Amino acid sequence: MGRRGWLGCEMGESLAGKVVRGSAYSVSASVVTLILGFARAILLARLLAPSHFGVVALAMFYIGLISQLRALGLDQAVIHHQNSEETFLSTYFTLRIVTSVAALLLLAAVAPFLAWFYPRAPLFLWVLLALVGVEVVRAFTYTQESILRKELAFRQLAITDVVASASMTVVAPLLAWFGFGVWALVAEQATGILMRFIMTWVVFPRWHPRFGWDKDIAKWFWRYGRSVWGAANLNFALDRFDDFWIGTFLGKTPLGYYSRAYEFARYPRRVVANPLSSVFMPVFARLQHDRSNLSRSFYRAAYIILRTGVLVAGAFALIMPEFIHLVIGDKWFPMLLAFRLMLIYTLLDSLLMLSGNLLLAVGRPQVLEKVLFVQAIFFIPAVILGARIWGINGVAVAADGMLVVGAVAMYFQLKRIVDFSLFQLVFWPVVLFLPSWACGLYLEVKWHPDSVWLLAGSKLLVFVVLYVVLLSVVERGDYIRGLRWVWRSVSTRDRRVGVW
Image (cartoon, rainbow, N blue to C red):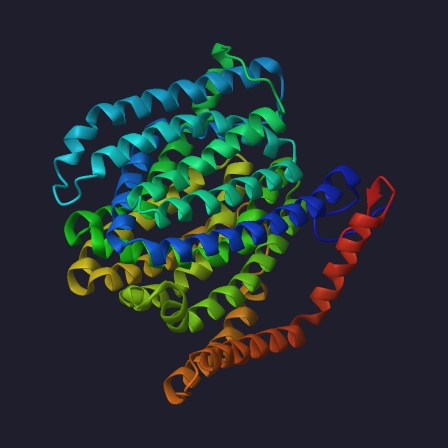
């Protein structure tokens, strides 16, 4: 008999073991890709100008915009639905490829018209067309990756992530070094997608895709996808409207600063939140009819994501001045305040991503759509006003406010699906973060040693030690139970695994 715990009662090894192993694979791969991506970002920031990043960010806005026209939630639908029959998968493949290619051809047709709006970015047209070609390959890659996730094949996905990231880290900085400018950033995107295509279609093919069609299955995809489509468009507006507004009305250089601040602000989420969310989405789908086990799995995933996110985000925000000066160059100092203002965004973004995956996994995309709509009502006018009053820093404040509004709206929706204590989830991380981070900031303001490295190390040490030690004292019981559950899950040979 299994013990009750994190994921519920008497869970078979095929699920409990895969959760632990999948999390280990995903987090390990995330650490490797984070290090590679961070090194790549540093090299590119040193070798390229802010305007180069602004042009690519603007082109990616339009790539994302046209992608929303065919964003029917097909990948999420495949994971949500437990059907793996040939007719189901071939219908999915047909819908995925046809809608993607049609949308991208439309963008290629209107690209010259779009370029007319950006006379100060003469390479915009060619960058946009090159990225359209990259996105065609990405559409084929998504089909295999979705099936791998559906089958909990996280080892294969982890290897794919590492190979793609390593390739990007070699190609993009090398081209930037040889003076290819903005094309180094285009090559970064292209190399990653091409390697993912090779890994998922040649090395780890889970299914041999073929075109097929079933009218009833297509109708089911449409019914599921209508709300996902609305949610995807709203999410895109929340994720990219700030880029569009800054690039169009403030210029490509301010967008370059903002895009780098935004990029670095999302690194903490990539450490644990992204891999755990990818692991738990198919788990949520399998537990969607068991509220007790679903509640446990959601709470524990959110518990880990929040605590690690606070630690990584707080540490990075403290040492950002020294990071800019020592690593990427003083030309990037205009992004410092915008980055630090995004600290609230960084902390809440991971939890909202996990919550959104939960809603999609249990077949509630319309709930996610409502939350995103509330956020959009706040965010779009806030970006316009914030940019007018305070430039990119005002936009960063608008992003923080949007996440706070979304977190409140999401909480009331989640309570209808899962049971958890918001107080237990957020109280101690938030309460202990504030004084710990304030002590590190106090050092920055009051202490001016000759060595910049000494200041950065001291701030980091003070914050990390205070936060980790205090949190370990008040929550040590949870950590002990969690470690015991992990040990049982990976070491037992019984088909039934005790759970935390």
